[in-house]
Image 1 (cartoon, helix red, strand yellow):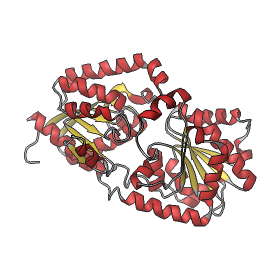
Image 2 (cartoon, one colour; image 1 turned 120 degrees about the vertical axis):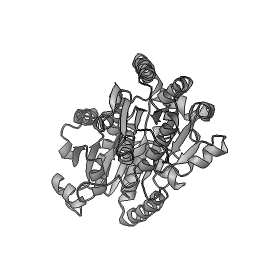
Image 3 (tube, rainbow, N blue to C red; image 1 turned 60 degrees about the horizontal axis):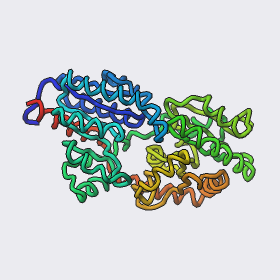
Image 4 (tube, rainbow, N blue to C red; image 1 turned 180 degrees about the vertical axis):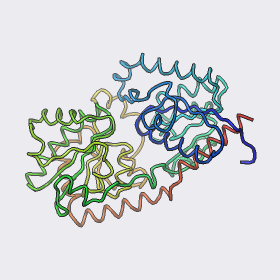
Amino acid sequence: MDHFVDKLRIMLVAGEPSGDSHAARLVAAMREIASGRELEFFGSAGPAMRTAGVDAVVRADNLSIMGLPEIASALPMFIRAYRTLRSAAVERRPDVVVLVDFPEFNLKLARSLKRAGFPIVYYISPQLWGWRKYRRRTIRDNVDLLLTILPFEKEWYEAHGITNVEYVGSPLVNEVRPTISRSEFRARLGIGDEEQLTALLPGSRQKEVSRILPTMLEAVALMRKRRSDARCVVALAPGRKIDEVHSAAARIGWSNLSDHGMSIVHGQTYDAVNASDAAAVASGTATLETGMLSTPMAVVYRASTFNYRLIRPLIDVEHFGLINLIAGERIAPELIQDELTPEALSSELLRLLEPAENGKVRERLKTAVARLGEGGASMRAAEAVLRVADRAGQ
């Protein structure tokens, strides 16, 4: 940068675990780039952002809610968060506001803060190419710079009249890696290298786990009728509790998970997926992470009947799974809503466990992930944010 400001105040707003993680990486990258400069960060922050040094005027931990009835009941909480963040912006006068994913909330905040005169950068752009395309005008009128992480997004936005777009790449490239070897993880669970292991990733929200995990467990029971030595591991997302697994098991009449070849790990998702031969993964960022570890998967999802009937007509993409969208083809089978049955899921997982099919799918996943490039997305995003902030601060 030819000209830069010695001190910058940056507001970041995240509302979900994945956004919290991406924003924390962004903060670390900005600190690295701006060595010697004073950077102050505040906003809506989850645990990763707080650890990275972001002052949480709003704690994002409880903001991750899906479903219209659930959002409606939590509306007072969202209104308080919105007002708190707007007041903090007016009081602390950030040089730039960085909104990270979380479009239901952040697009409304973008409109308000843009009118108040703050430069707006949107990181992890809203997936308007998939649904709710009518929000294009909101982006065009209220966002100064849109940072996209998927290879096809920049072209799509520009074709729809939004030209202030930069493709920075996926921040997950080179970040998704196990901490221990496949053999070591299996040894800790008492599973041999030659035994077949399936990972179950039921989602990061409580409602997802309660709706999806019982079906996953029933699928495991069917798999074990075909292969009595089949082993499974439930990989719980941060913020989820082991009691939720036991509750799901109780709903299908299980009292002891180990009797059904089942283990549970918490905070070890990458290790579990890397050590597994196949996985059942709730639709979302986890499908991309699983693909980055080259583990064949079935993509699953189930919302409430009410939510699904409301939202499904708004969705305009061929694939639900992020890994399939990036590949441009159906690498991972998708079992969504009524298609998600124990019989269908067990059948798909058993197919993916067949050695020939397993090897073929792993190669296809590697080809798809290669489309995301060599990494460095957080650093490129950090450079773009600081460029906007410097411009505003001069």
